[in-house]
Length: 50
Ligand SMILES: [Zn+2]
Image 1 (cartoon, helix red, strand yellow):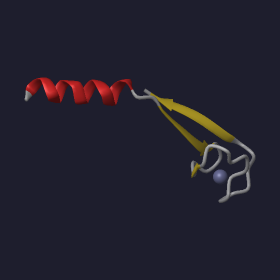
Image 2 (tube, rainbow, N blue to C red; image 1 turned 135 degrees about the horizontal axis):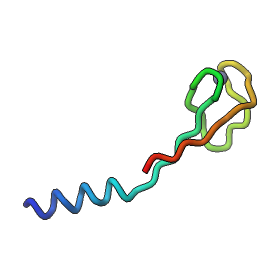
Image 3 (cartoon, rainbow, N blue to C red; image 1 turned 180 degrees about the vertical axis):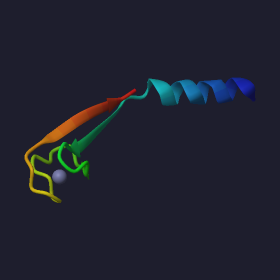
């Protein structure tokens, strides 16, 4: 039981998530978005959460 829990934790922490958001207003956008739908800024930044 404990072993299963550890495996689940490892699987979660080794998974890399990438978040795209507007640099100006912080709105989360899709990966292929080049222009913020909220403030129309072309300043999409990518954050990698590991
Ligand atoms: Zn924005």
